[in-house]
Image (cartoon, rainbow, N blue to C red):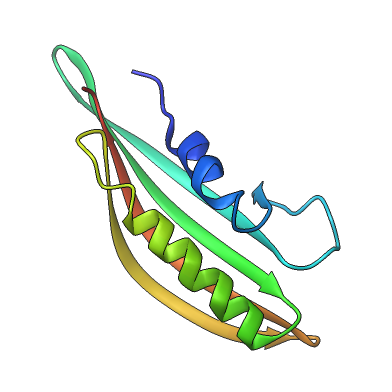
Length: 114
């Protein structure tokens, strides 16, 4: 079973704003960065599920822009419910740092073997 959670996130978030893995490759705002941790769950037949603990950071110049992007991203992630994927929202945090707004959301996203 190949882990496709990151690929799925890119597919649904890139139409909303640019998505980067772990570190932004630009200073142009807005953007989103995701920091994943994965765990494989196995039976004697092999991997049956990949559990992704995903931290998302939306970075924007204004609170309104950051909030709008995060709302759209959360809606997109909640919309990936299928036999192969499901997601659970864990928490959200909001802060301003040096004139930039950073919104953080944490999810568990599970990928199942189908």
